Amino acid sequence: LMTKEKVRQVLKIYRRKLASLGVAKADYPHGKLLNINQNYQQRGLWHCHAMLDKIEGFIKEDRMDKVFRWLGFVQGCLWMQRIYTLEDLTNHNRKDSK
Image (cartoon, rainbow, N blue to C red; front, side, top):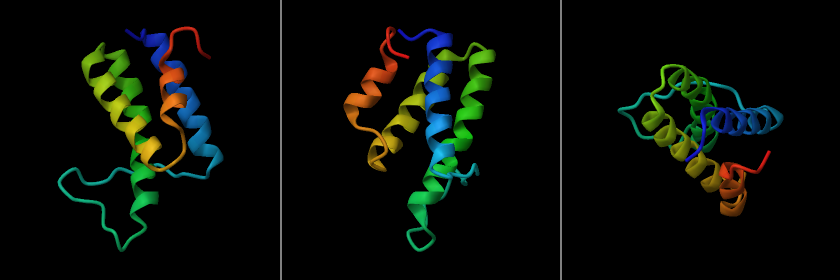
């Protein structure tokens, strides 16, 4: 199981990557599908970028079940958007990786 510090390291990787790609942060309404006519892939990444800060808050609150669910969601989106391979994502989670 990943430690809080390990999750923070992974969040830092994703923050750096999304920032380097110029991805903004923005919440998306939870009850709506991404609108395919409004640059949905970019909007999905904006939402994921904003989620990273919220995950940090869940770590502070010791809500690790929620941390892992949200992290998994973000990682799935990063794979679907062709930002990281599945191997990359698995390696990020390994305790000995940086």
